[in-house]
Length: 218
View 1 (cartoon, rainbow, N blue to C red):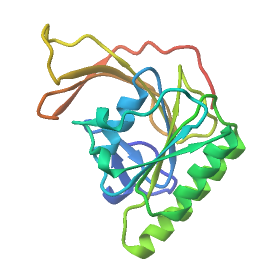
View 2: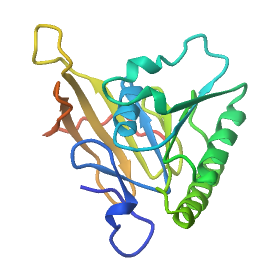
View 3: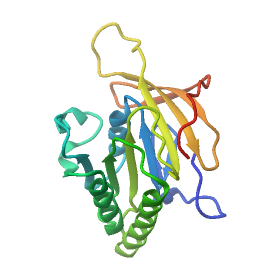
View 4: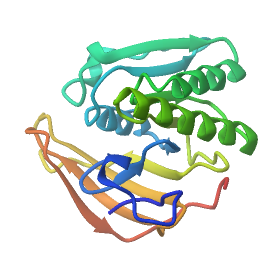
């Protein structure tokens, strides 16, 4: 299953970034991850990419990203962590990283949904980065905006919400379980799945009844 594309024809395999299971994201675009497990979802995407990952965080937050905690989902040695003093700085840094085309994945933790104009600028930067990556024979970049709650950034290519769910094991294990909801995609309907990740890293998706929260953003 894939998300929408910007062209009239079907996307090529190289234009799609695996999300989880058989779900994919469109490269050269900006997507939103929200909900209490949004960092975990970003780590799962990171584990399916190669090369450096630029992760941008608000510099005024007291907590710090525990890179070692990304294992076994992703290799923390690939991380380039940047901080910004203001919201505008977060989006500027993300825009520049996407435009360079040197990192296949650019993640920005944002505390409030950006407006439509900043998102359009990010899409343009991602498209420019895709062209640069094509010239260099590398992978087109993809941008992920992480937002708390139900998110709501206007103009994103897709919006995904993830929350933890009870594990089937009563004892400690490396198995993870979540509810993943596609809140928005340009040409795909809202949908929900029970996502499980086994100790071997294998992922399974089981369709679930859709229980959408109140609409937020565009």
